[in-house]
Length: 252
Ligand code: MG
Image 1 (cartoon, helix red, strand yellow):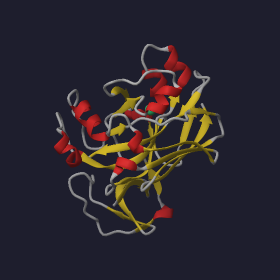
Image 2: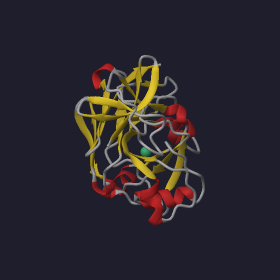
Image 3: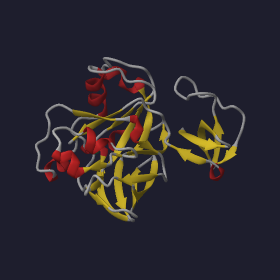
Image 4: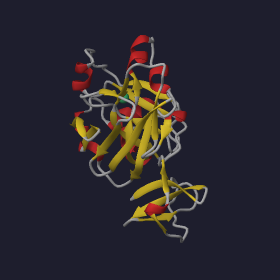
């Protein structure tokens, strides 16, 4: 099932996408998904980021080939960092190139959307707490990230976490093709089975530390091929079985 969030007649709502139409649902989609009886053409709404996370937990250097291109070793355990929820934008939204930075990078990633409040998740419980999967761009001010002792500034600017276009709830995400394109040219191309720490390991590890809430998002790490973007560029992250997330780089 494809779950989206959209804006229509000045209201933000969740809905199901089916055959070019949106079927709005009552309330949040996490506990039960109940159509409210309306049916709206997809082209007459504006898609929003498909969830409203309280936090984005991201995994650093989770593909060996990416850690190698950064000339850094691979962490033995998942390397966690947070992006604030004020980073989140949706499909076709603008990503703002901050004038504080001289190098703005894309990082195409698989996003995992949590469906249940959870803590200390065991490997057997992992599938039960995952709501679905989406495309994500872990936008990074690389010069600021490298200059600081940690990554809050470099990863935390407003608009630095495009998510979307929707959440796919019925998918085996263990081996999906992932591709990032800049102005139509393929820059990153890999498969999610190349992750060092798989999704189950990530969720167990994160929830030893913090509670995850419905709508929270895990950014599962980026494959090799990272690079910079310029004002005017169009960046796309595509995940097999989910779709294409497209964003536009603008100045601040
Ligand atoms: Mg990343």
